[in-house]
Every structure is written in structure tokens, then in C-alpha cells.
Length: 197
Image (cartoon, rainbow, N blue to C red; front, top):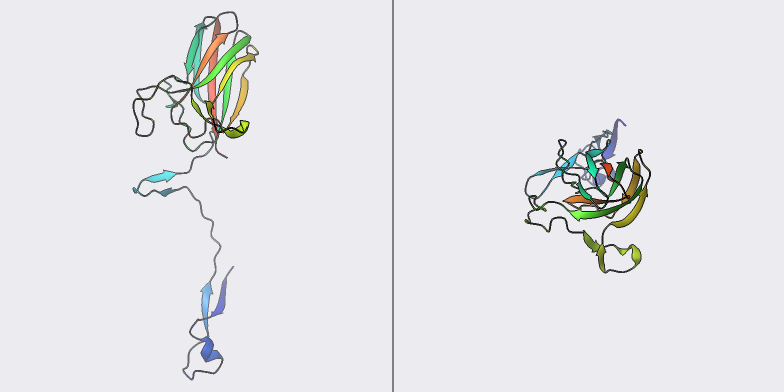
């Protein structure tokens, strides 16, 4: 859009002939449409907070070898990409990928991350504890386990990919405990993709 003319607030009486003062009844108003990119905001402490975007690739890749039947791993562990533990602040959902070379059942539990890390400004946390909270999908406000899948049957040598909606959103210190219940020794690979809705 270009320029247009509009009445000035003080000139309506002049245009109607009420006032004899020679006042121009119109002013030029510039109307431009400009694209704006919203990349975040400055909070009350003056700190720049950028908007979160969904991960475009899986992060927190981990490979654990020789895990005996009944053995467990914590994932993600210390990773070069800085994704340990998972920080879900600003993320709603998570895609969790797991690959094993031994088909069978695997137990997956969302747990609190390590006591060596802060949860916002609190430390120490109850490291390795099953995450609990209120999830109202059952119609009850009672505190319950956030995510505990006792026996998920996995296919060997392919990525088994699971969508976790809302259950771990905004969890600052997130890890998963995986228990090998396949009946044999396994190599377990894991990776994660965080999603903003």
C-alpha cells in the first residue's frame, strides 16, 4: 500500500466551516506492509529469550553395547552435542527412537536427570527417580508416573520410533531408563527429536 490522505483530528471543524482558521483538512499517511520476524523477547531481567523451534535432526545419539538381560542404561548420557540430559524447556512433544540387535521386550521409564545438574535453580535433584506428576488424560488429578512402559516389544536391527505427546513437556532434566528384558544380551541405540507445537 502507498500513501493516502486522512482527516487530521483538529481539522474536522475547519472542513465543516465552523472555524475560520486556514487549516489543511488532510494529512498524508504512509501505509506500508512490512514483514517482521519474531525471534524472541527480552524478559523482565533484561535477558534475551529466543523462541524455541523443533529439532530438525535427532539429538542425543547414544550406543550402549553388551547390555545383559535385566541390565539397564540411562539415555541420553554425556554427549558431544550437548544434549545431556534432555532439556525440554519450551518443547511440547518428543520423538524417541530406539534400535537394538536383540528383538524382545524393553522397559522404558522417564526419570529425573543427574544430581550434578541444576533443575532451574534447584540442586540436588532426586537423580534417577521416576518422573511423577498430574496428567489429566485419565480424568483424575492424582499424581502418577509420567511415562512408564513396562514391556514394549521391539523389532531388531531397525529404528523403533515412538511419539510422546505432552507427557515430558518443559522437563528440564530428562533421561530415560531402558531395561533389557529381551532374554539375551543387546546393543541398544537411542536418539531424540524435540517438537514445538
